[in-house]
Image (cartoon, rainbow, N blue to C red; front, side, top):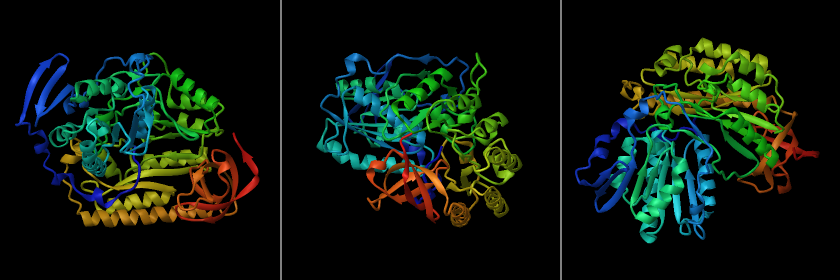
Length: 527
């Protein structure tokens, strides 16, 4: 999954980096080694390596059964470690990272820690990282540079790096070599081990590294700290698609689906707690259930069951066109609490480029899927992800992307200039598209998308729409902002007592990026 838009920092090529220097351990020596791991010393710092990332192992897809565990992640004896102490969690990347951060915060609070926004007050700071693009990696290392001074002033501060970047060998070794002040490194598969890693780092005073290359099992009952009226619900982990540009199958592992009863129980509990909207999450949500061997239960079945739960809005992301079957289209057509917004990443409008990306569908197949969706959900709003400048992309192939955008009429899109990720097949391809050409293509693409976004918004003039009020506008405290069922951003004047409520808003001024409207005061509901 992706988040955000292209920035100049993204334009830096990974080929300019000398990754070999990250593996230079000539000044490191092993202090001890046993079945539990090894202890090494680099520049005077002892490092306890319980397990480390291995790209070869990450490529393997084990045949062993995935077990589901319902034990509590925070043992009773660890629930007082953080009393009187504070934490900060910085999140980089996609919605899955946001959801992981909710779990991390939940465990920290069960240990007694409390949230703070003041770095100088914090006793533990964790960076939950993304590996989708090189820009995200650069941001994390830049943040570590700033935190080094804070660590010098407060040696007892625990600094940790987790998430997708931690699953990469080069990243971990770079931290060991250049950022020895970090106290913990852990990955995406062992987040539930956080309390034990904190205990180890506190008591040993050593850097602790535990990154599992194999996915492990599914851990239920993990505490979560959710805020607001919307909630993320993870329904599966990992991805088996292996698109040639993507590192996610290696950092997140093979596809593992949560049991239906566990997902439905969580959704019912969120409904009971009064949440107004949920978003079902997965690297590829519509592959849900394909790994079950004892039951036949698909993503369409899950959506059909959730449709019957009393929660006002249900979204999902991200879906893969290859797994978007007719049964799912049929269920979405039933409406109800299933909203009319679908994020459907296409990546390119050229069948030749899609083949090089290993997307496993053609331009024609994608357009046929769009036709089916629009027929079943007539007022559907479609958004997408698109990469420009993929290795070998010609002017004609890029024009095919523009024509597909026009034919579909996407409301918005996350657009990116291709950024090679070490270890992916695409990183070994000849990148023969000049950077200046890539920049021009990105600009042209964004202009077309903006044009269709504005056209779609213009059609809403004078309509009355349901808006879930999220909060005050960043630029004007007298203006509230919220989203429609189709995920369009709406600004209107109103009081803060409306935050968290459903209101009716008449659209008065459509814009390209958002819509302005006026509140209909008598139409305010809490559910």
